[in-house]
Length: 373
Image (cartoon, rainbow, N blue to C red; front, side, top):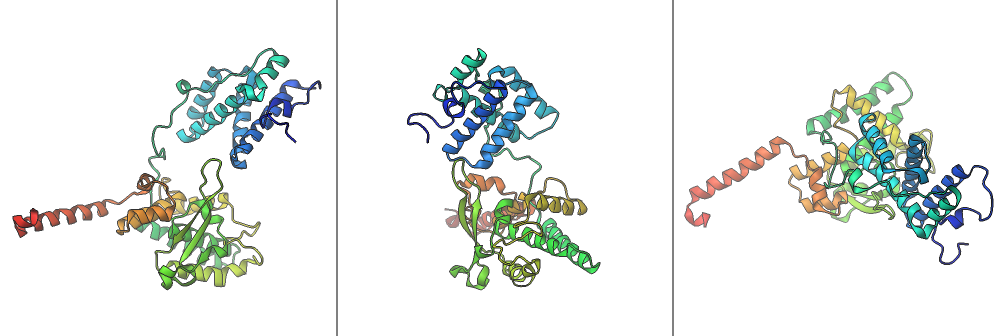
């Protein structure tokens, strides 16, 4: 039980007082990381976030070959510079790494956690904050996605889905194993587009997450998709939402999958919509590798990734004249500006829109001055 008034992750909780350490530097560093994890868990951060930050802090320490009480701003400069120039990491990734180190330094330099005093006592020095505004990049834009990332055109999307279906037929025709996983992934890709889902939102669906929608009775048992593992805010559980079916072909592919194909995978008792032959659910890496293989075979550029299915959903709905607020609610964006970032309307849509407005102006002018007024 934690003593009253002692902060989670404090040095007094991680190190036993009065006990000599065999490897003091390594053991104190490990205790710091354990305390850092406890402090973040107390703030209700996800374990994946906590583990990712610990991995980053360890990587930085290994790179500079120094412990936290020996770190300096010059070290973080060199590390981030190498990550950018040698590994060519994205700006957002670089910033997440610097944020992990900044958070760790903020933790170990806070007097409430007693690590500065502990290090002074044991090593004659103490950790300092090494990540500042003047030596790290700032997040100044709402979106920092790679400029080459984009949505599918309708033609590309049709070709991609057709190719995925052809692979199933080809594998099955040759009597080879693997046609069931190929069909699963093809149906999963179509479902991600049909509901504008992120990759993890799609793979975490259960069979029970599809239901009727009284406002769309024509879609039968597949008029609604309940997303239970939406993108979470920091320190919050996954965000849930319901997505209404909009494409008339969606119920057909889902009915075939759940009624005829999925039972062949021997997933009896598994709630997962997309069971794996090796585990409960298909993995992200498997989906990515399949997607990239199909993209390359079709000669499509690497600006298309799994998330492009979601971008395409937003774009095609907007191009189809759907209300932007409806689209925003469907994809679970808190702000309309976020949805607008996803919108990659094609030139033909813009040309039609321009022509329609110009024609309306000309028609109004020909109708007489009373119409213009």
